[in-house]
Amino acid sequence: MSTDRKAAIAAYKERKTIAGIFVIRCAASGEAWVGQAPNLETIQNRIWFTLRQGNHPCRSLQAAWNAHGGAGLTFGECERLEDEESAYVRNALLNECVLHWRAELNAEAI
Image (cartoon, rainbow, N blue to C red; front, side):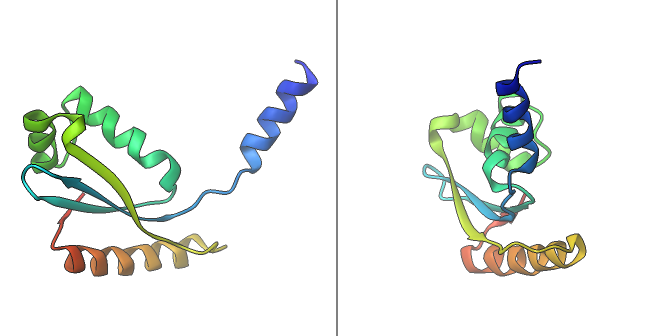
């Protein structure tokens, strides 16, 4: 294995993940969905993949995708959490924040 590849792998393993709250909106219907993610940088790809496959667990989000396609939905970040060493504390903060944003945006849970 080359040193460049080893360095790239090491950098990937050491990268910081940013936990937070995200919102998906449908411009056509005005619907919104709010969720939490341990890594905001990768969650959109995961959600869009399951929607393209037609098997996202949130039926109303899947219905909006089926009706309006990917161009009809937008992804945005509501809040990023500061680095938290304890997974327990981070998850408790995420749960508290997601409830706030669901109420604030009158959104459905993902």
